[in-house]
Length: 635
Image 1 (tube, rainbow, N blue to C red):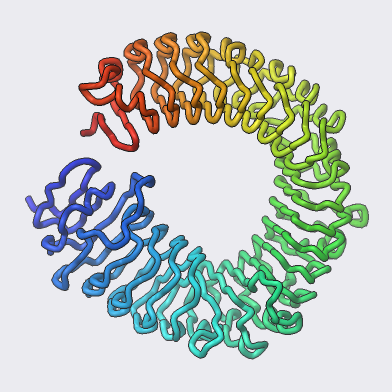
Image 2: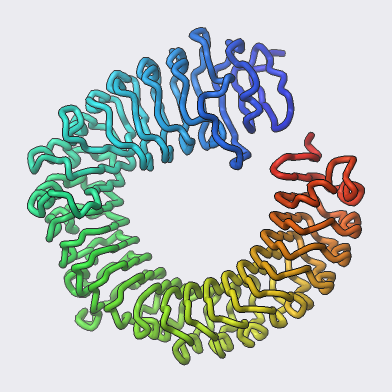
């Protein structure tokens, strides 16, 4: 029987049949084998599994191909550990039709790739280090799919991209000043569709130049991003900016629109309902001179609206809502901020019209002059960051929310009275970066539905509030960056997950763990003064995952660990003084994975067949030490 398919598995030396036409591999092990001789190959596909190893500086030997190779498909997507630069010999793959190096460390493409006249698909998306494309890319006349999405380091486009008339996908175009790099190169790319980001619009020469892009005649585009450089020293005038944006009117099929760095003081007429009726998402960023907003409320299908760094906007109200009977009938997510001069959000002037009837997610960030939020009953998810204390008090009116995130407010020592007293629907609460906060007092007492509580980077909090013990629905508790907390109180037995990190003074977990019979995940990291796990850990008979990281004070684990009969994963990282593993670990029949990294004493004691602790861990299916698999049921 002819073997046409071949899978190279991790840590196994492959047997590559001479008749193989389609090959896939799981890690860099392939890089040690010479594929030049496998002339039957038509497709080669990677499935990465290791992201910790450094990238190659050049293409591995396995991919150095000959002109006799008939490879059609080469897919190295997400192959982080593979290479930074493709070898020039890839130009010998005359039959190649599909090349995917997306999300890799690649920095540039070799000039020889321009000779691949049969190449139809070239995926470079999310190659964030890519800074250069081949100069003769305009000669690749068969290209249909060229994806440059999020190639953030790319400095310019090759000259004459407009000659690639078959393109259906581009992803990004960077406007240049020289002939062959103008925005007019887009004119003849009639069929490009999907998403397109046009950058460096500062280089557009004016109205006529911008009109050459011919965006209104590209019906297949559904997402458009237009950006000017965020550079205050730019000499691009306000008038020129307005001319350019007016000329870049997209087709009415457009669904997503982002404008960034626009220097005009007003938006063009095409940003109205009649010209772009199908818009679903709008994002305006760093449009610093625009005081007035278009009537986005008239867009029937608009679901997401983001306004950031619109620092001359002072009021949101009737103007943005428009004159329709039901402004923003479909809007689901609204993000405001930073908006340093936003003072007022009017809803009283709506004349009884229903507004934001579908809005369920609201985020307000860095609006230092805004003092009040309108009451929007439909909101379920609310984020307020770095605003006034007066604005924070508006949370009292959002009694139907199920998730709340509060951040900043450095001057607050306590939360406003009664802030959360009526939030019986609240399920998730995240409090972070409140540097002066000392206590949550009785703020948690009435949160009968709360399932997840996270308190992060609150430097002055010395203890968890007593109300934590009364949260009978609480399942997840995260405590991060509370440098003054020394111990945990008795916690609710309903907890399923507990994460404690960067609590420098924490010395004891005793009371906190003794009743957690439902706990499945426990993670401890960067707790410098924590010396050991308490003997009460024996009560955690539901625990499935235990992680201890960066806890230099931990020198031993209690032998009571033998009672953790449900434990299946144990991860120990950077516990430099952990001397050994307890003998009781050999009783953990469910333990399937043990990973140890940067624990020098354990590394020595857990050597396969030789270490003193090996008899206690030999039954574990997968053992990984310093990123090396030393035992696996698959090997």
